[in-house]
Image (tube, rainbow, N blue to C red; front, side, top):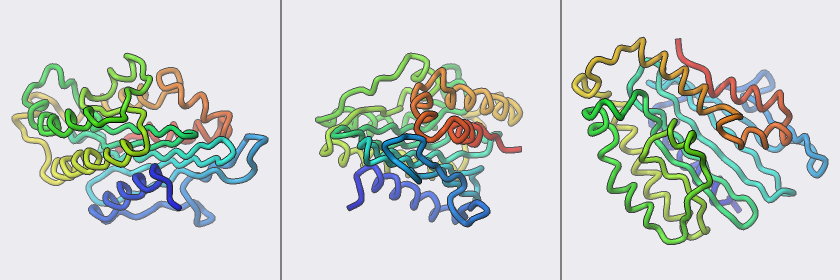
Length: 247
């Protein structure tokens, strides 16, 4: 039976790939872009992989799935990246089950300083406010343990929570609402009024700096746990792929 985190991951990935007609990039053996093998004595062989999709108006979509039954770990991540010089946010959702506990992270990652550009804030993020506030009221959610640095590099509309199974199922409403709004932004773009004086060069430079901060073992301690699980080389390759910027 498909787990709740895997079901949510598949739902989001399929919607993105189907909407934009994307194609999966396979490795030389015809498997996932980056297969992940266990480095743990309690589990031998594959524990998942990173998949890569390209095409349409996006730069790339990267997923990372790690499933280790011996650890009761079932983790799935989707990152949908717009081009580096685009003002349209990146879309991300993580879904995890560790033992009896579930957790998720959902956000549209800002592409510029939203604290100094009210028009961008209003156009890109304000439409998410009602669904964000409703999601935070779901019974069975509690805040995830994130540092102030992690909050600073994402958006104030980020949802990052631990959840009961019942609460986890209910967050799909927010996941789809964020996704629908993001689809609209990708397809119609961000208005010139919302961008004010931002140039494509500035957007691309910020994207590179922001990705370096987000996908950073010092900022996000989850990478310190992934290294021993799949090997540091494979962990570093995942970080490098997630930090990639479009030309």
